[in-house]
Length: 356
Image (cartoon, rainbow, N blue to C red; front, side, top):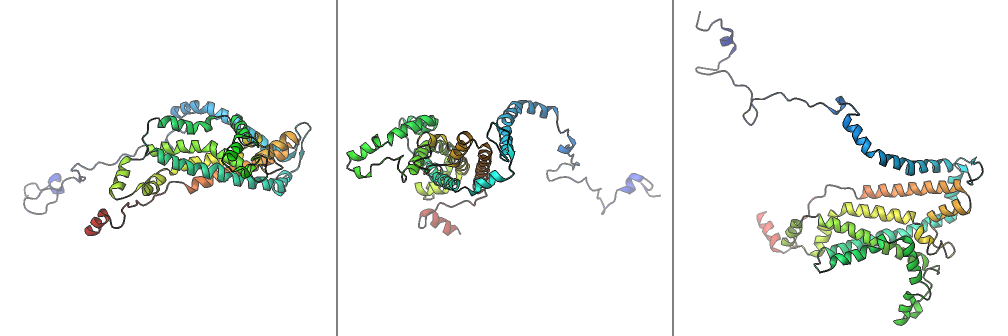
């Protein structure tokens, strides 16, 4: 018998030639022996409500209770009342979808919805555009006292709506400061009762709303500009980009989340606006400044039609919800290809062409 014959260890090791040895254990790319991967316990194997989950629920329980009592419960009661003819005193009579039918067939309400669409331009579009311009300019200006100037521009947002309404009502009165200034500069033919004329009442209220909202938009955009990497602007300047190109290629895309928040807040303010209109025109002259929220107040507290007011409130809430979701979908983050900031004929563009 040859040496090693019958040895189970020696016969189990195959050879490939003289002097060859058994193959080494498989190793990874780093030279270490491969070890079987241990799977971490999946989420499904963990208890659904662990001690950590219970402690988290305890922290959010007060907020959830507050939301349920003051938001969900009133909405549920409004939905219930919307299917009844109810005056708040006597027992309600079920009317099915009658209140909703009355809401959608009311010509006055359709006019009020049109007024809200007009106010969207003043309350949402103008403040966002003005806020972008102011934020872009202030991010480049280095002047002493700029912080105080920003605070002054934001001041309308923190004022009470009643104070704002009374101040502007006196300012735009027929014998107010606005008409006095027009007369002093020779433009007396343009003087009018700005809040009492059918043609100027709605634009005047829109101007007041734009003045209130632009400060909020400016602060939101300034906070977004601060978070943009300065090296991006430096690279754009090296490639020949000017201030306008930097704004549209760097600043504006980076402010997409802030623009979405600003539009949601301003659109919601435009569609649910009540106190500003009530304290300036009360929907007049005639019905030229009526909005759906004013109809809700009149039906509920003046006409004692709580069922119809509840139906209108539910419809208005759904409209606001749809608009908010549409804005979020339109401005959600997408993978945008990087843009070049090179102008034709510049040194940077010629160098890239030579390299290609």
